Length: 111
Image 1 (cartoon, rainbow, N blue to C red):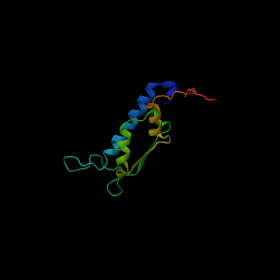
Image 2 (image 1 turned 90 degrees about the vertical axis):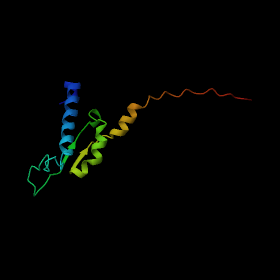
Image 3 (image 1 turned 120 degrees about the vertical axis):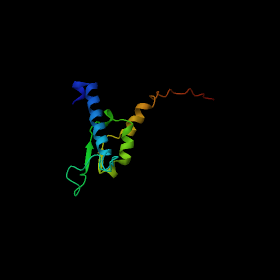
Image 4 (image 1 turned 135 degrees about the vertical axis):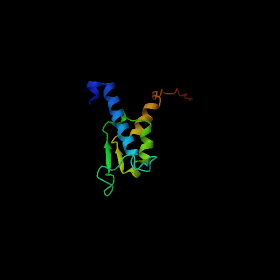
C-alpha cells in the first residue's frame, strides 16, 4: 500500500499488520490455562514452529515504540525483524531541534 497514494491510511494499515504479526509471534509457545499451547505449530508438534521474519523497507514510516521490546524477545520465538534503515538514529534526528547556523563572532583586533 503506497503512502504516496493512500497517505495516512497506508501507514495505519502497515502498522496494524505489523502489530498483528508481532502478536502472533509472541503467542508462540505460550501455554494457556488448560495446559495446551494457545497457538499450536502449523506443521505439527514434531516439526515445531518454523522460523519467520518481517522485512520492512522504509521502516521509519511504521516504527513504533513497541518494536524495541519485540526485538528483544523475538529470537526466543524463532522470529526476526529486519529494518534496513537505522530507525533509532532517524528518530534521534527528528527529535533533536534543528541546528541554527553559526554566526561569526566579532573579533577584536588590537594593534
